[in-house]
Image (cartoon, rainbow, N blue to C red):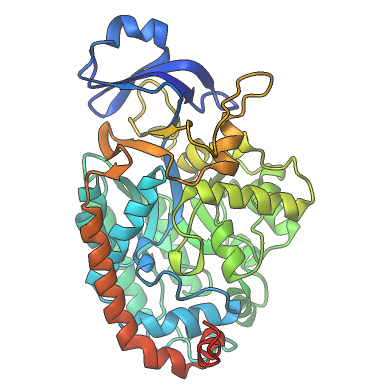
Length: 478
């Protein structure tokens, strides 16, 4: 007997070096953990009469996806910040909305982002943002999902960035306040939600804080045996700031101060040379690539395949934020990552489907420091599981020989609506394709009201920037 028994499925366990496939496979869950994985014929003897039995014939059973770098709160202004020059994106495009986004708005956006994610198979959210304890309380814990969270620490106040081509003006008291908030988050929320909430540190970026504060955050993380999740080499704007202040590039600066090691989760890293990517790999840095977001914001393909080729051990995938990406659908993200990297390298063999699935599961889990708990279907690991229906027009036929086509079909053809069930920590979050922990209609209505309020207040400020999108609106192009 078990609490949940899944049988007759096509298991992609991620055990070993590949997908760890088990045809006609089964697994059993008791409380929060996986207690058995194997052939249905073997496990039926003990678990056939379990409390809840799921027939998974014609379905794929996988570990939940890990969205390793995400800002769910920004979902509230989805579609308001794309197709613009990178140098404008943060200041002229996102900036006008910022002062009108209240904490309750971010919560509304966070809940919307979580529903989008879980319905496409995401079970773990690598979230960094502001006041994440509040987000954990209002979104992640009640949603029943797993989250690896951090409050961003920086010295950027409302008057810090009058000109993107001049050094930012650091606000030291604000930096101290944010460091304290980051420490408080770890002390108060790490382990919350039956262990689903884990907390780390997030120095926002080398361009947004002094060397002193950057090193102090790292010291605090090391002291508490926590990781640092930082934006690194994320575009021309950062490159300008680091060049002005330190006379070099982000990677070379961080390496020169001894910052780069396996205690660091580095997101983005697309404003880099090949040699700098090799430095990241050599230092053991944990790399999170967000290709859908960066393609839209920067027009650059992040070096995910190159990082792997250079010997990078830890690599995960993130959706980043909705205003300048394709949303929080990791199935779409895997496809974009694979295709863009094939084009970047002019090599269709890079990042094959099986590797993308590993990066989105066990790879992401390892990258954010949770690989001992999640990311694969193994006895003793937490029961974070998704079940995908393969019997839909765009996924049929199902072929086992000579080439099993389930992995490539998931990566290249799936859309997200194939996900029928999502289990996190042994409990259903999505059942029969519907989120059962949050009210979908209520979440969407609340998000719409929040977006209406934000955009009504920010509209004049946005148009006054006379930025790229503002000009397009004035010309009637949108």
